[in-house]
Amino acid sequence: MNNQRVMIRFDEVSQRDKYGLRRLEGTAVPSSMIQLIDIADLRANPREAKVGDVTDEIEETLKTTPQWFQFKSKGILIAAANCMPRERKRFELTFEDEDIEGVLDGGHNLLAIALHILRIALGVERAKVVLRGVKRWEQVPAIWRAHRNQIDEIKQDLDFLTPVEVIYPQDGAAGRDEFEDAVLDVARARNNNAQLTEETKANKAGFYDAIRDSIDDKLVSEIEWKTNDGGRIKVRDLVALSWIPLSKIDEDLPGKKDFSPVAMYRNKGACVSWYNKLMESDDISVRTKGDIRELTHKGVKSALGLMKDIPHLFDLIYSEFPEAYNQASPGFGRISSVRIWDESKARSGDPKYLPNPPRTKFYGAECSYDFPEGFVMPIAWGLSALMECKDGKVQWRHGRDPVKFIKKNLGKTLQVYHGMIHMGGYDPQKVGKTLACYNLVANDFKSRLGD
Image: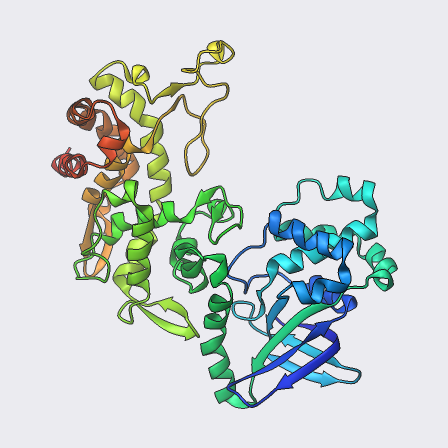
């Protein structure tokens, strides 16, 4: 919503100018909601709005008892850089920084309102076709724009009022500073009932920017950076793996003492908490806008820079693991937790065989076996042995190519490691939760650096 403007007209409204933040409170008319939806991207909202029971109930109220909507809904909270009063209870809002301005709370209300208006504009039967498959806010704007003329034709028929609250800064630089300091705290407080995850809070504070900047562009849109935004890959999976290079930094970093490699498999939520503790430290990052922080520590920057390689290496290990295991001990496919893709047996009805080829976790490459991560997470941790911290920066040891190393040595490592799987009763959970497995692989990788 950078450099966007919207005119909000209220049926009734009050202003409060006495406090550190200025505030409008009132009930906005439907045409103003249409204008807001025209430009809204919900980026400032910590949570992504998603279709579900909540939006269904809101739409039901708008359809059956629109006169009560203003009393039944908590409405929409908006943060704006400027709010200029105009005639007839209208206020012009200006948005300058999409990171902290826009819709802070009430994204589900705005989503339900948009869908309600579209259903009226399109008609029942057409709406069933056009809105089929719409699950999240990000799918709405394109449909909204495509049918904007039809929306204009019915806007006079809309008869609901929406509670709207606008917060904006006091005049002057000091007012703007106070606004930036407070606005994200306000957003989090208003969203407390939504039980924001650690990942959502961290994403909003900018903790994941370094990971986002490092990984392949093709993966960025596939990751669920915040709650309900629909990514195929959970950001906690990446954060857990980021501790592989972070562990190599030669400093007593916040969260580092708490971290254990086993947590990458059994407690990824804890990995996120330790990561957040690290990133919110004043020794690691600095505040830029309110609670948004920018990474400044060169060692952490270099470690997270290696995240461009980690997802690819994890997928490589996963796809190469079955053959490497079979070289050490034929029979990987007979392990009870392993399922097999064999096109000739895909329709056999045997649960051991998959109906479709499995895919690797990050890049979705087809492979022949589907099996739990507990077997491969200790191998992933072994990558730490291929890294070093030199002059305060984490890098691949002596410029070593980790892809070539894995291809050359994974089978040799499995000659030793498969014994741990056997002693664990071929149970991936036992293997993934046993620290000795992680240490064994790391030590074995280290011993092969001269190969």
